Amino acid sequence: MTHPVTGTGVEVSGVARRFGPGAAALDGVSLSVKPGEFVALLGPSGSGKTTLLRILGGLDHADAGTVAIGGRDVAGVPARERGIGFVFQNYALFRHMDVFSNVAFGLRVRKAGRPPAEEIAARVRRLLALVQIPEMERRFPDQLSGGQRQRVALARALAIEPSLLLLDEPFGALDAQVRKELRLWLRGLQEEVGITTILVTHDQDEAMEVADRVAVMRAGRIAQFDTPEALLDRPADAFVAGFLGEANRVTCTVRGGVAHFAGEVLPPLAVQAPDGAALAFIRPHELFAREAPDSGYVVRAVRPAGPGTRLVVSGPAGSFDAVPAPDAPQPRRGERCALEAQGARLFPA
Amino acid sequence: MIPGPAARDPAVARWGAAILALLLLTVFLALPLAAVFTEALRRGWGTVLEAYSDPDAMAAIQLTLLVAAIAVPVNTLGGIAAAWCVAKYEFPGKRLLVALIELPFSVSPVISGMVFVLIFGAQGWLGPWLQSRNIQIVFALPGLVLATVFVTFPFVARTLIPLMQEQGRAEEEAAATLGASGWQTFRLVTLPNIKWALLSGVLLCNARAMGEFGAVSVVSGHIRGETNTMPLHVEILYNEYQFAAAFAVAALLALLALVTLGAKTLLERLSGRRGEMV
Image (cartoon, rainbow over all chains, first blue to last red; front, top):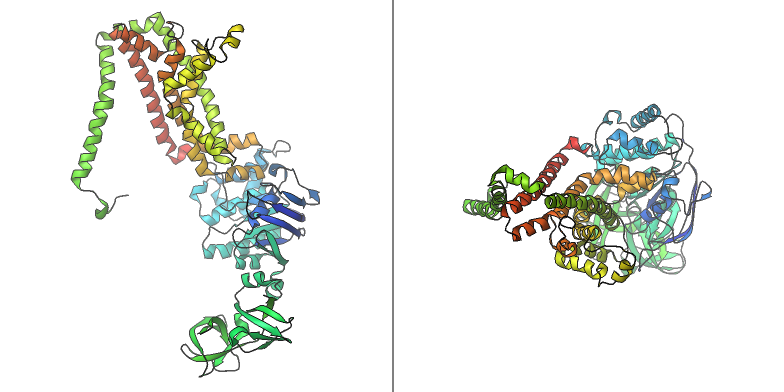
């Protein structure tokens, strides 16, 4: 697009939604998205992320709470008047229209201010060039690959020059290679166009890679809304710590600033936490393994991971993901070794 | 797809099934149909044309076409509306609605006709009210149309519901987010997606509307030249031993059905082709 679209901010406050009896799909969600920001809603299935996205897009309504887009309360504003770009999980391309007509749809249905046909054609071609499939104009959706459909869906959503772009699991149906490529491309495109973007995903790598900030959702609530670094370094609760990244979970008791692990599975660790029972999350890179012939732990697997090595170590207390201690020879498969935690995040149990 | 040897049935079974199916088709479908046409033409084209030019026959043909011309559009609109509700929305009582849509298929047409007599007839619930206003429903065109609409209602709805359910609501939602109004969404997105199934349902509905006997027979009153449709006229002629005329009218009715069926088959072949979907 030749002229960058200015994104709008989104203010969600206290939004609740319930489908029938049982647990609420959304249970008091508040979220503030800055103009031009790229936000990911991340959570397991059933956490309410898609419901929140549909409420933003006007495809569903909130039972309580308010949603303001660009400073305007959108309660009662139907989807067709919101001017929000929405990319659906399975793209929802119009199957009986070719790519050109799909992208042109949003311009052609305008009652007031419909651009003349030549301008529509010019804009569609610009968009198809932007999403890098200029030669696909006359193809039908069932003649496209998954990645190409994804690009058409995006071009179609961008055609109405939305100030907010909503993406529902946009890469869910693609294979791993295409998915990685497309999400980096999407991030670049978003920066180029400057549009506020909210993406729903259950894939943490995807969320961490593309988003400025990630809202981790659980059971209809936002557990934590922060930058990817902060989520990994300072998880707000046990759910976030366990959901993001890999971690060994060990129950422990804190006494006087020292965590004593249940069953003494690991040596005590100095921590900053109040006294009492707690659950410790120890990332693999914080758990050092070194050779110890009389230990109860045995190295079960050794796997190169980037510059280092990852170990799977098991003993009577279960299995741990660990790394070799940097100051000692690397334990080999089948060898006995001792484990020592270097750090942990503790949450009251 | 050619099944592997393990999936292939023995030749005896395959040929046996094919021959049995052909035999049944010949005995129960092809032979009777051929008999109708040969009987009709046995005394030559003259008799046939004479049977058609009889004023009562002409009236019956016109009435049949008129009833179909009213009932089929009504059921097309009603069927689309019903299928739309069932396929695209969740609401309490949806199962009941689906059951109701299928009701005309499971109820004997005679009962369907009697229901209308019970409601609108001279002795019926609304009879006195209608009589005092000089409105004639039973034994007149409105009754015939009502009975036909009732009996043929499921055709369009039943053809559309599975297709629309399979297609889901995503394309309509996409159209809404792109700024399309409800009518634009229906015209530009929903209708093109269902048009072939819709045409097929409409044709079946039409075939049945022209051929309906039971329900129409009850509400018609058999007034010659006025409330006799083609199927009823055939019966009257047959009962009066005017076999040649009866078969001539029957042949015309059968021909209409065959043309409808041919059109439906053609549509299905066309819709299977990519280029024709545009």
